[in-house]
Image (cartoon, rainbow, N blue to C red; front, side):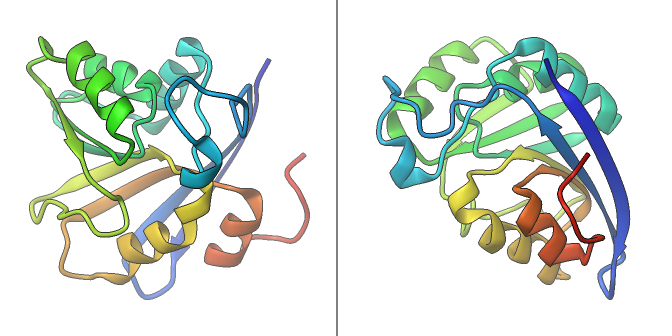
Length: 178
């Protein structure tokens, strides 16, 4: 079962609204994975296609959107995005996951799987949005990069992040989600 809390807040000085989704759900945080060292990469995976579809729907993704997914993991969000977005750029660092994703989405004309580190991969300069279940170990660096670089084409970011990071970055109210 999943419980959602959504907070939308302007990020001062950026012209960007952060749509922070805190969702209690089954995530494979730190559990053994056939895809490599999850602890080293800070990976956690959405374990439900229904949850992924709901996140994409809640974000309001349409066929006109170019969506960058940072930390594509096993592809649950990628799959849901492929059904709704005009273009999906799925970034993943783990080579085993990249191989699996490339094979899985080879016939999807609107999905490109890229082996890249979300902290320094080139991002589009034309308008794009981000929908990502960020690896917890790099959340601060990725959020800082997305929001602090005015020259990129980011117009919206829907991010699943640790509650502590969300509070720190957008100065959300104190206390855990309820």
